[in-house]
Amino acid sequence: MFLIPSPNQLDLKEGTLQLRRDTEIILDYQCDFDDLNAAILLQDEIQLQLGFKLVINKTFENHSDKITIRFNRKAGENESYKLTIGGNCIAIDAATSVGIFYGVQTLRQIIRQNGALLPNLKIEDKPYFINRGFYHDVTRGKVPTLKTLMELVDRASFYKINQLQLYIEHTFAFKGMSEIWMDKDPLTAEEILLLDQYCQKRHVELIPSLSTFGHLYEILRSKSFNELCELEDSQGGEYSFSNRMVSHTLDTTNAGSIKLVEKMLMQYIPLFTSNKFNIGCDETFDLGKGKSKAKVDKVGAGITYVEFLNKVIDIVTRKGKKVMFWGDVILHHPELLNIIDKNAICLNWDYSENVKEDGTKAIASTGREQYVCPGVWGWNQLVNKVDKGFENIKRMVSYGVKYGATGLLNTDWGDFGHINFLSSSIPGMAFGASLSWNPEGDKNFENVFKALSIIEYGDESLQLISLLNQLSKEQIVGWYELVNWKENCSEISHLKQDYSKLDDKKILAGYKLACKIETKFTTLSKDVRINAFDLQEFIVSARAIQLVDSFFLNLMKSEYCRDDLDTLFTPMDLAENLEVWFCDFAKIWRSRNKESELYRIREIISYTCSYLRSISSVAC
Image (cartoon, rainbow, N blue to C red; front, side, top):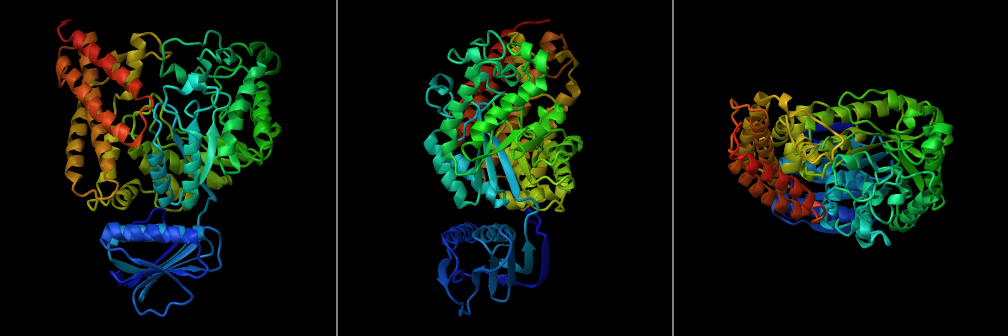
């Protein structure tokens, strides 16, 4: 039997208990409406898996001789629970509704694997990290619908995640800033309020996150606010996926910069019940390279950064919020850590699969509270690189344990238009949840892949996530390379790449494997009975890998006269296949997301297809 997260203590016993149509879910008289919500979740799960709907009741004592599922309020720690299956009773004992809720999530996983015939067992469980978060990008191209965000809350809380942050730069409908968001389908104040309310029902804290220093590309290239950019001549120009990642920092010497930040914060802070606020302040690449150069030359980049950071912190703390900020910049100036508000939480991120402990150790040496922040490796990818994300998460959790971090915030970024689907981030999200609850849990990746296949998808073959991992490793070329190629052609990218050095044999092998995995995904369609829509996203992504592989083989043949290459498709056929694929991709996108910036993905595909048609009749 698989469980995610692995419980602290699991004692499997002899015998089984069978759920029946007349089984009752009985709430202890001390239970409240939160516990009723958990009971309804369990009721829905049993109906989905077994086909019958149990009655929910509330009593002082249980005198029934029927099989019962009992929620009991008993002394214990806040999020801890005890789950016992045996005799004629399933009992979930906890001191709080949060503990009851987590006991229900574990029971749901057991039912998904065992059906009505449940093993007798005893579980005693509690979390290692008090703060177990997931960070989801809703800015870099893709804005989910409110329904999708609620689904994300459901799926995160299923694995006992208790914090969610949404990354916002320009995709909130700030008043007085419609020039920035009018073509982005932004989240609204009402949507945030409703999402916060929903999060509370699932015992998830919705923590606001807003860029307030760097990563303000869309704002700082606008007519209204370009004068606040560190660099000159930032207004307008051709949009660039690659440039937006490095050109976006506020001019700290302009008094209007902090006024803009305060204007945004005053609209955003009131929407959240959380007592925390993530002010961002990462990757201020341009600092000192333009308008603030004279100041930076005089006092240093570190002091200039910290002075502005502290101004933002002051605005937020005056509204009663505890500040979080990304730690990458200050780690270049560790001697300045102690002049930042000591109550501010440092979000220590490093996404390398070979990440070292140095950053975690440096922050810990100052006594400052920190979260360790790994990533699920989806940025710039058609499919998240599952194994690289898992390795990064495993290492960062271990450093968090070693150096006394108070939480984990597992990040999901969408650089270059957020082409990767939410579904391929779920394995990394679940693995981060597992190790933040129990760092001693199963770290064998293949075991976790099997567990996720059955628990998340009902795939009794246990193959699905392993196949996804295999697919993710075969992206020899992908979306990152395609975007850079397009932007290099129009000379708007800061990145340059020599495509003549690509390994055509590896690309061809990747294509063939993607074809095989697409077929296997399609075969598994009849077995995936939970979250089945994810499988369609996997299939569309596998097809994308095949087509991008073929494009680069055509590119190498055309640009470098490689007549020996097997291009798989003629340029004309490939153009048509890409266009048909995009229409399918767009349908999938719109199923879970607003229209948002889908048009930017379309522009890349249209440019690529135009190029293919231009070379279809040209010989070297």
